[in-house]
Amino acid sequence: MRRILPGDLNKTQLIDRILRVNHAGEFGAKRIYEGQLSVLKDQASAEPIRHMYQQELHHLKTFEEMLPAHNARPTLLYPLWNIAGFALGAATALMGAKAAMACTIAIEEVIDEHYQKQAEALKEENEPQLSETIEKFRSEEAEHRDIGIKEGGEQAQGYVLLSTVIKSGSRLAIWLSERI
Image (tube, rainbow, N blue to C red; front, side, top):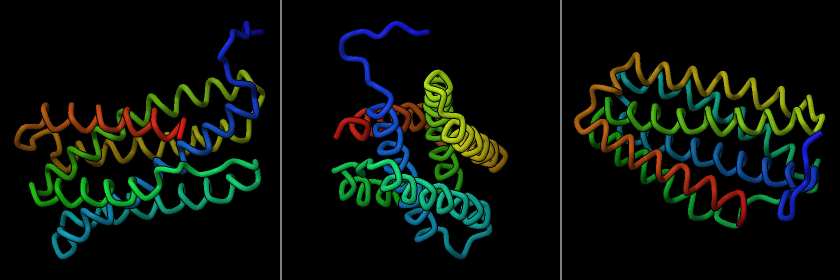
């Protein structure tokens, strides 16, 4: 039994926060891949992006269905993530297919940690169904990271800097979307 401290979320608040941020994140991922596909659409490098995009659409649909079922609301930052996601995707694709994959690697490494923490918190709250959904999506996000590596994302020009900036932005987007 975990000790409840002032400022800790109750179970309802925790689920609301998890659904809000995950919905926002999956919407952001959808927009990133749409931005990348708008640039790389006719190139061979677009095929793995299309595969990842289809999985993200399924994740997004799942969270879209869960929000009203749990009386949770989406983030108010939805319009920002609409623009920022597409811009990040298009910008990295304009830098080349490897930079687009570097973007995927960076984001998925952050999401892997994020989903792992959520799954653990949900297990503590005895929410096995939601925890299992997040674990399933986590494994698919790890697959995306592996695709990014296989497709040469780590060889992108300025990979370390690009990865650091994208990871920082992802963590900020998570923090904001949980709260706003």
